[in-house]
Image (tube, rainbow, N blue to C red; front, side, top):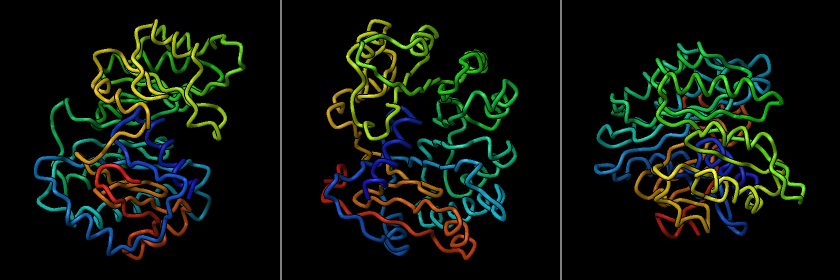
Length: 324
């Protein structure tokens, strides 16, 4: 259960820089199996007339798809889950935000466009550049041409994972993202405080580029919920950033500044926009119902090949806006 809670936080906060996300349960929360019937009923009962839907779509690391499993098998499973879940949504609702995270290089541009086409069958996708379609990439595994294809596929916000030894690839793709006019560019990096208060060159290089958002994640996953060192916070504030959550820093004109009051619990209410997670290990919050798909890929793919929702665990909260 604790692993599920940590997984939810890492997927959402680190990859999307504090979007409205499923609130992970507290340590004492008891997570139980959530049946497909209960998930279908939650989807059918959503009140979406005045609020669109947020979709989190997870792509697993390539190395986890060992033969006989392949990217094609996982894509087929995602398409099946999308169809099974979205056909229960009322009144063809609007897609408010789409966030694709994980090993995006697993899919080609054509496969990503297949996912967009599947979503269009059940949801209203905004056609203007003010839509929020984000994707996270690893610069060392991408290129200017790849970013251009992602932009053409419809993505307009991007996260660059800056944890590789060489920063030049991240710097080059940052320039590409600016040239391609992505609406929001987020740079994400791990840090290992040594207690000296000294700033790592990587953070200084990131701040010098002035991305729209900077996300810092502790290198030690057991300390994920620990706030960054005071020296890091002070440096970023001096560089012109506002601390939106304990690990996310944004420029003053960013829309996330309205969430700064949520810094204490680092969990933004998603009551205005239900969150539907698609993919192995993806998390959802549909008003009072919180659940997380099981992570193992083989049963996820096998279950959906049988036209059934994948196994999931979760709980029903007392409040529709903030699980307890």
